[in-house]
Length: 368
Image 1 (cartoon, rainbow, N blue to C red):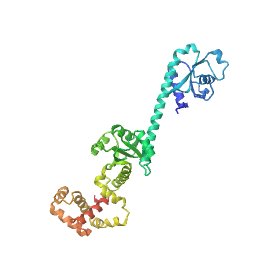
Image 2: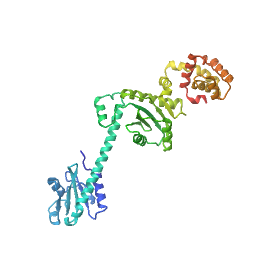
Image 3: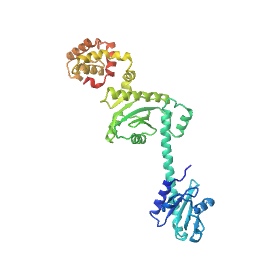
Image 4: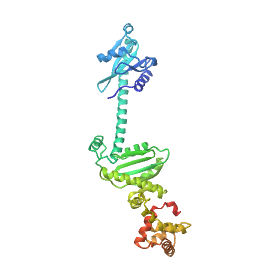
């Protein structure tokens, strides 16, 4: 239920007194002065306001009547209404016959300010409740029918299939401002900021987005996006929660292993990310041993760069040689050298898979 407060009451006073040559008081529903052009009267009781509150009508007080009331000066006191409910009293100091022309206009202005403040409070509450609700829906216990029902009532459309994006922002960037831009441009989006420079954006899966062009657009608008991890389509809240965890792993993987890559998609890195999540397991540490043997003899990083290119081109010799700018014979020599040092033959399916998985777990900087 909306109530007057000191800030709103004083704002009404300041605005009306900027155009009126009379003092203005604003009282609450108990007759206490909350705002006034005479600061010493704030937080004192106004008997004229209590008459208005008791009778819900305009009360005019002339000089003679004012002498018999406590804390009252001559003037007109009018009921302040919001949604047909009495919430306070507006008082204008002066002789009533001089004020009648202004009184209703001042009351209309005051009630418009009250309505505007109420709408702002409602919008702020709605935004905050939506933010809180989205965080709950994305948590492990977010399947509560009550939460889903409330989300539907707030227009969040929890039934829509969505694709999650996790943005990592540079220092000084506002996740709230980016959230506002995305939700205004892509209706029915969800945005949740779990950390100062992080923003989860869940766009409706039916909306087609060119990820590279989106990143370019944000760059052009001045956003400092360090990297963004893009998940796959998630159907239902349980699927969205799983995908949210995956894009979190994907972003961390990109930060550690591919620091030069700003756009990371789960479709491209799903298997490496799954392995990276268990990177401290002994079995995965053993997977890196063949590559460590190569690195120990690869002072200029040539062999590891060759192996990366070999994996990137699916073991296609000519495409790999062209990408490296070398002859196929040179490529064959390097691959033989990798097999010799690592003890794993990259020309076989098992060997290529083992080396590929190891390469995906190595920070990119190690090959430069």
